[in-house]
Image 1 (cartoon, rainbow, N blue to C red):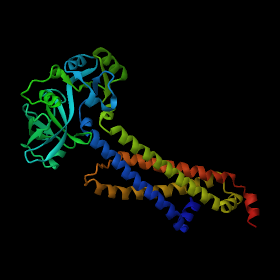
Image 2: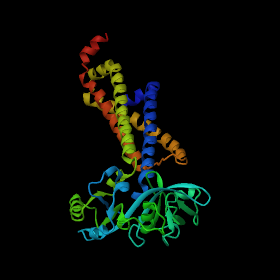
Image 3: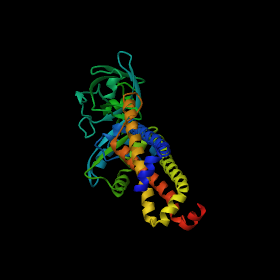
Image 4: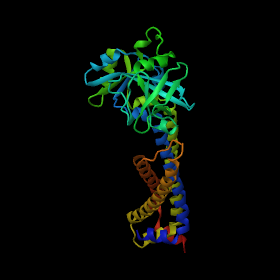
Length: 377
């Protein structure tokens, strides 16, 4: 490492320029990671918080909009509860509605209909849970929009009036709108666009969006397939059901593609820099080999130099990115800093950058000491 450290010390401007590029890439990586986590949380945090193993939707339903298109029978919950390995099953309704409170504050809701004594019924962190057919429990984020406990929210189309009886703990959103839990008959009336006093259209009193299923352990594909064949539904695991949130797949796949390109750029930048550096050091390397330095020593020295540069640059970039991200978390932008994804992305940047540098440094093995020494005379 003597040559590597000496060169890093005396060629500060050259390595500083290279390090600055990697710092900028690391900052962009942190911001993209935070944006990806924020969009995921804003899109499906309500589903992530549910104690559900899988959802059973209408047979052969389009998966990217299953929650809003699927229609299954409430009685299917009993059939699913009898399947091997199933701990519990409950009807689950979901519909996107608009409403406003008595002060005129408008709110968009992912209205969730559940049976009050089922395992998917909400547990309020503030106020009470579901107390009657006119009560609604909202995500805590709704409070930041000016909604308070005791407010009366009137839903458009159905004119159903719901009294806010409590707030859930933390963010619970679906498709970037807050979740609101109501009793199943209330949800069926809102989904049908009629008031609570009116009769539901024929058959609608036995319909919901899906059956929420809770297994004793993580369900296997064979277990879900066997249940679907028995009940006549199409199941998605909880994680697979995230794709049924509006825009979730398009958003996450776009950001994932950008991140993949960012990792490739880091590897190419590191490889290009060390290729040029190795060409400039050709005569120096030839002298070292003529003096007896082994190829292995020179390779280890070059890789060590690349590793030091990547560690320092990525570390500095992550610190700056986290500082900038902490400021973005206080804005309305969906942004969430999480240690795991940032640590994984940092390791990938360092590893791929090191791979790019290693491909360039392999040129050292092709340096002929006699030819190089002769050319320098």
